[in-house]
Length: 324
Ligand code: ADP
Ligand code: MG
Image 1 (cartoon, protein in one colour):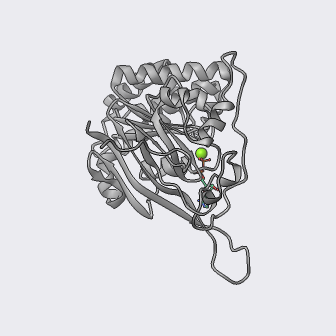
Image 2 (tube, rainbow, N blue to C red):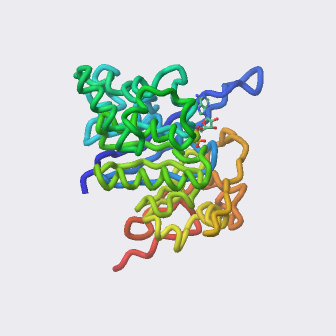
Image 3 (cartoon, rainbow, N blue to C red):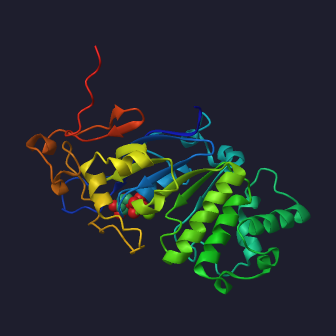
């Protein structure tokens, strides 16, 4: 299957404030060697707790930020190598929806300016009449009215504001949408409506999603494949159903143990301290791992295929013996 998006070994480090007067500034590898593919029309979920590097990864995929290492290929073209100018004609094809629908919509602009914003970035921006028609059609496709174009963000509820953000992403007819915790700021009842809308839009338009969430329960029925992220790395990847049925990495098990029951008890992952810059070597999860062995603190596990379409980075999960 050819990939719409192929991310290869991306690394993004941040230099942190010096903790000691002398000596080098510590470096945090917020995204630390992540690889994956997303096929056209498919959803890949990335799940992990706050601070694990999800939004940094989203910005790299969106070419809003550049990796220190690695490649971000859109149908074979490495976005990380392109100038802003060269990126421009490609930007139509991938869009983002952020978590906070209030913070991401300029309160001083009417909806048509917000939704039309991305149209202005097109290589050939449409004229007035077509622009109006496309904004109206984007609003209608997210369940709003064409007449909402003249209103302002504060006149809408949280769920409606997120619909405006989705309309803004849709208006350029992208092939890929990066959804960075798109429902995390919404009430539970509204979350389901917005998730249903995303699924419906995918079915109608063949959209691919990179769907980012701190909540494993949210992605269960949304994504065929899931990647579990911890401390800047993918620690387990596989079909979502298989991950739920048989989680392999101790961290995935921790996440699953915290998944709410079907009665909809609201759940958030525990918020951990921001990552301390890690000395090299050893598993990043070792301090929290109930199953740790002495060598886990010394030898870093790599993401290794353990079955068809499943990979895990844990010394305790051995790959099956190769048949003779
Ligand atoms: P998530 O979206 O999973 O909550 P982020 O990608 O926002 O995680 O952040 C990952 C880590 O990188 C965090 O420890 C965060 O503090 C750090 N970080 C993110 N952006 C910056 C930045 N611009 N400068 C320094 N550190 C950053
Ligand atoms: Mg984030």
